[in-house]
Image: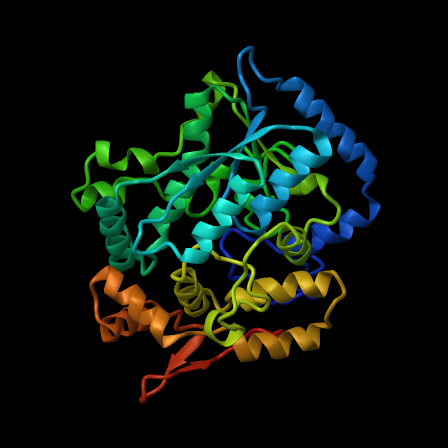
Length: 375
């Protein structure tokens, strides 16, 4: 395990590759932004919009996948209020047992701001079965969830005949998932190769689910994209002030409701992520024990690059909060998956990266690595 020389990104992030200088892809990209001509990028964006005009009789210019959170709210407002674009917003709805009142309010806020929203709701019973199966097989109940979230947007685009899809950040440049890189910085048609989407559906069929049940989880094939001339564009590539904190500030000024449960329970330093449900903090805890980094690491990396905190300050935050947890959230998560809390911890211990953590006799974990240094 090695750390980036600038931020606290470890090389254990799936599909990431450090530069010969010891920089993670996100820091390499951030350094390159110092020489960007943002006016030129703005003009490129305008050219893209011209190349994908709405069809005769259509009302919407593009589609944005939304949760009602900070990034989707920022995108919708920018396109409409800055560029005069009318986007159709597509939201995948969590089942009643998972969605939070906060999430419902934030999606309602987008509607109240004047946007058209299409809500896709996969069958709750299938959703639960897949989350149970994903946890048992991968210790990751979110594998199926993410597949449905990503698939819903191009599926709706095809049904509505809308060719242009706007996405937020480029996960290759801004997070380090190099398999998602396209032909250029804004081309998102390689999103299908990200770690989750590339895992396929075979494991779902093995758990007895049928093709009709899995329709909401099928990401359209390359041939479907070509046949319908679909293009995903990373809107964050065009915005020089795109960041977690800035997007949250824009969105809060326009009615976004954020978390108040505290970083010690969620690993969310500012309370602005995963607003629509409370199972994601558990997924982040699992990620921590699999890969050695959690939600706080993602936060501080951006803050270090932007110069708002030092690397040493980031180390202290990661050491204190990266394994944040809340017993109530864990209990709710286990109840939804129909397992006991003890079964949850046994499964997590079995899946823990033994190269990074030592399991003590009392059941606690000890880091073998030093934050900011590695192994």
